[in-house]
Image 1: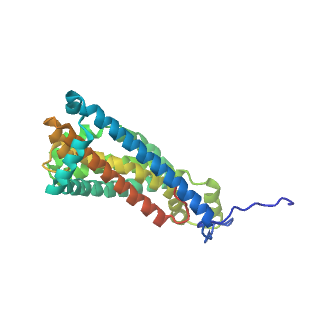
Image 2: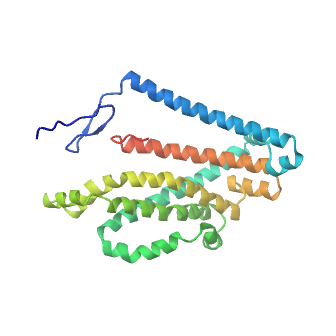
Image 3: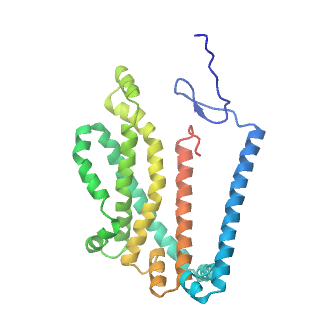
Length: 288
């Protein structure tokens, strides 16, 4: 009593003191302008650093043929990108690798997240399976490639399996961490109010775990892409992994970098989609 409570200005959707989602008024123009100015300054600095790096790289390789052979040059790299974009091979490789990555990403995260959340139901079961999960997670994915090819052949299924296996353990661990990190007082409160274990799971555990689940989703984008590309390294006739492997075996370093740039672009695109999905499913949380 006698102590006033300070409230922060309402600038976005949030929760009130009773846990209800409330609609906050938009940020004032001055605040928005400051935020845009900072974002613009960050972007300008990033572009300047990238331009300086490319200029130094071009200058160093332009004066030394051996360096140009070993490291390529930005002009040669973008030349290969333009050539492959015009003949359609770039878009075909991006489509193949992207499709394999997306399937592995969705399947691996679905089963990993489902198992991780369900392990919240029984601490006994989670303790029993913990060493097996750690053992599976410690196996390098490239070591499984020969077995995967024997089991599933050299087609699409083997690449999707590699991508899925790269994702599933990470998704399982992050979702289980989110489920077990739920506030015990909130769980006890729901039990006191007569909630069943399934109601606690559906209305408390799952929503409270979304932050960790989406953190895992952002992390597993790269793992799914690695799994697909490793599978293409082992046996494939198309895809970005095949393009990297073929160019590397022929010592065409600029073409290797061109395929790597396309791979980075694909990863950034998938990460952006996950971020938009997070904003859609968690509107009450301001995503940084």
